[in-house]
Length: 358
Image (cartoon, rainbow, N blue to C red; front, side, top):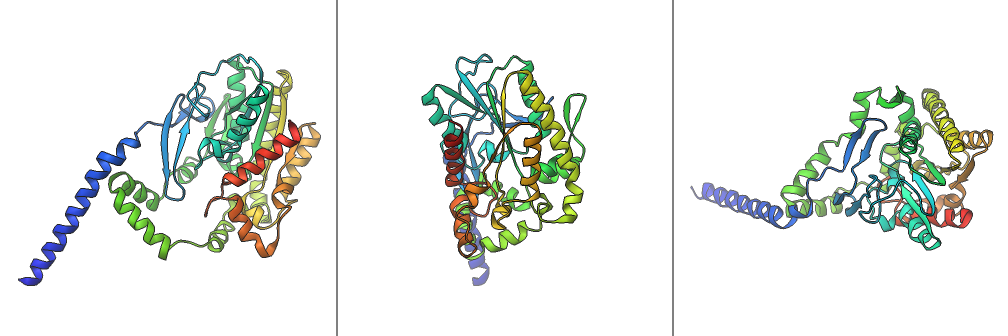
C-alpha cells in the first residue's frame, strides 16, 4: 500500500510539473512564436518566402533568430516596400541556405553586412536567396522578376556544393517552370526527422522540459565535431568532389547547372546586368583542404569560357589552413555541428567581396 502511495505521489508530482510547464509555455513562450507561414510553394520557381513577414525562428543548435522579408519576399533588415524600378545602383544576391542566412539574424549574414556597408555608398543590396535553391531556380527566379519589370544593375550568384545534387536528381525546368522530378527524395531532404519533430513539439508545448533535456544532452550525449565530419563524409551531397563514383552520378548535375547558368548569363547580357559567380568551400571541402576540387575547376572553366567574373573564396578560407588546428579553424568559421557559416564565416565573405569589388 505504501509503495503504491509513493508511485501515486511521483505520478502526481510529474503530472503537475508537466502541466505547469505546459501552461507556462502556452502563456509566456508560445505567443512569441506565431504560426505565420514563412516558406511557400511558387508556381514558377518552386518555392519562396512570403512577403512582409517578421517572425522568430528556433533551432536546437543555435537557439532563436529573427527572419524578416520585404515586399518582394526577399529576406531583409525590415519590412519595407521595394519598388520594381531602381532609384540608385542596385545589387541582387541569390543562392541557397548559405545566402539566405539560415540560423542567423540579418546583421550576422553576409548579405546583411554587405547591405549595411554599401548603403553608405548609395548602393542597394537585395537578397533573393532561399534554402534549397540551385542554378535552375536562380535562372527561373531572376527571369520571373525581370519579366515583371524588376530593375537592377548587378547579380551575384552564390553556387553551393550541394547545388549539384539538386540539379542532378531533384529539379527540372518544364514549360518555363521548376518541377521536382524526385518527390520522395525532395521530401526526405525537406522533412524533419523524428528527433527534430520531437524537439519542435517539446519546444512549443513543454519549453522548460525541453531546455532541461537539452542541457542533459549537451552534457552527456552531444556529438563531437570529429564524428559529425565522419558522417558528413558519407554523404554524396558533399563528398562527390573527391569521390569518383559519386561524381559520375552527379555529372548530370554539373551539366544542368551549366545550362541554367548559361541561360542566366544570356539573360543578364540582354538586360545590361553584370553577372558574378561566387564559389566557396563546403564544410567537408574545408576540412579536406580541397582548394582545387572538381567543383572549383568546373566553375572556373565555365566562368572563363563565358567571360563571367568568378569570385573564388576558397583561398581566403583556406589560407590559414593547418591540419593540426583544422578543428579549431572550423569552429571559427562554421556553426556548431552544422554545414553553414557562422557570423565570422559570413564576415570573411562580406569583407572579401567589399574589398575586391567595391
